[in-house]
Length: 222
Length: 221
Image 1: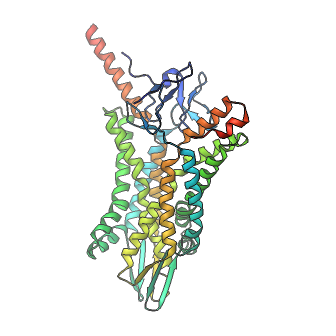
Image 2 (image 1 turned 90 degrees about the horizontal axis):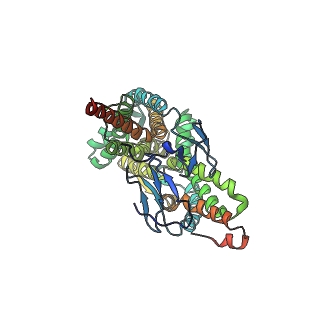
Image 3 (image 1 turned 180 degrees about the vertical axis):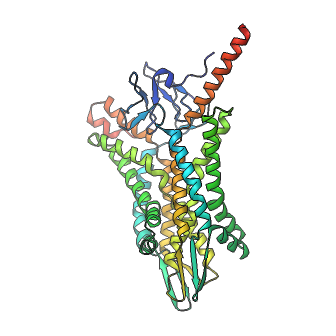
């Protein structure tokens, strides 16, 4: 654990969220991470330019979502018959066959949660620059905290690979352009998770409250 | 001899969402975080009860999830329903050992490991068995990290249902086992989510305090 001296007379304190250990002057230097000395939990990863990276990556993810959802991912053909799958028609087929719970779960984990994640992070990283949006941004961070575990694009990608292999001896399987967009979106999703540092958002909002002049508040960034 | 300082003893609690240190009002067990607005509890409410409920539910549903078929492949009018295990065996027989291993780990090993790991943690805490906190934390972290990969089989089914849809030539249909399996995965993820790892250290510290008290009594007596 590394500590830094704070300007404030009252020492900055925090508690580990996994073992409740009380830590004083627990601040991670830039580019490093803070680890609990007792249970080895990572408390904070202080990345440089976290908000800017998150803003760029989340917008990229939203842009990639459009072709990923619209274009077919795979094409399968036997003799002259063929079919292709998108993110949605698998869900539709399951729903039509009566598997409502299963189709809802697949839809949530492969479409709604990733889309919600990108949307929330874009709103957080852009919205934390305006004082009027402090409360909605705080709510968005809380929603992101609950939603992040349910975005499973990487598991879906592995499912695609297994489906490819499983059916390749039955007929002819071809990869469509939508799959490349989906793979790119998956990478961007993981990078967004790594780059987002909620502490940077809280720190930016706290700095703005300490410095009332509006001119300097907008310039603050990490 | 007191152990390392805990936030609870100082009347403080860390918000699980934004990690802000919150002063708990006197006599209260929960309050609202001033920073992110979320509700903060000293310990997750009903953590052990909820985790036990989810674990038991998941264990029961694991039986139909593996007995009932999850998928049926119909090719030229003929086809047999396959369970998760028979699907793995088919991949293995086809020489696709790597894919078979991936599906086996994701669909069979991971749910079982999650349930066993959570039961170990719950039993150690609830019945005050001796535990090594760092090992327990590793079990908890593994259980939390691997849970999502179990959905692999379900994603594959949803992909194939749309992809292999050619009427009389070839068709893939989902089976009732997939519903049970989906519930197992979600229930185990919720179990890991509701488990509060701080209870591990509470149990450890309580046990150590009792041992110190006994040792002190023996030394004085």
